[in-house]
Image (cartoon, rainbow, N blue to C red):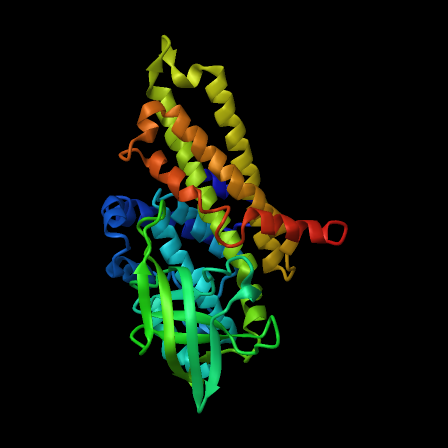
Length: 385
């Protein structure tokens, strides 16, 4: 896509990978996406084909079977996925590759990586990340699920809410409180599907992202052995924070990919739609609003790749990423609102892509850190970059 090719930090290999992903989306996702919306999940064989193409190993070291790339690769991937117009597919993939897998890579022991990673890369073992709870979303330190030492393992009790990939996935990385005397005394555990006491309490019915499966999980006296502890005991909060910037970046990336696609669709529609003796696109109120939205999408794209470039070069861009996600995800919703508006009545019909995209976009200012929480992160760092 030319918009991406113009972004300075991307080399020819990343642009080629972006184009490869666009081709996959056009050929393997778009023709089937409507059915996945009805079914409520992405078929496993599609994920396996992505695994076979190396799409799940972008950030995995070459020594472990991956491509050994960095944050820029994640963003080129996320933006290309966003062009699908089916954000439920996008988030199914990105939860696996960029929200759950980094925990295994960053904190996993050699034995855990050897045991799980090959199937994860192949799409044979799909991951989810179980942090959010009914009373703890953006406030990770507020989780109530607890794990208590029990012999040569741990016994976990609690519940998780809004967990993507939890219904049809294979393993969830569960955050649980292990030190009741420390607000941040949290540990992470690898809990496989089918573990006794670990169950899907309810498959959740969402407004958007309908081709992703989302669940409420219950952990009722779930016992896991010490080999399932991921990382250092009591350090799970900090391990979770370590990946938050990447999670937020890829959410922006898929959103920008979707916003660009929505604008492209709307420019095409208004260029063909006849009204008031001419094309809708010839009306100044419409074309100028579309132009302003395009300028904002271009600015957000440049900013997100700059944030990725900072991360790739050793800077921790908390203020920059927090501000970007807060602004960009609100802006993406403005794009979708106007694209629906400029489609007129057709924009309100389920057969129109922009109708689905507008529903999908609404979660972006909530997931991965609500806008209000992220603005506080920016405010705390103003004058202290």
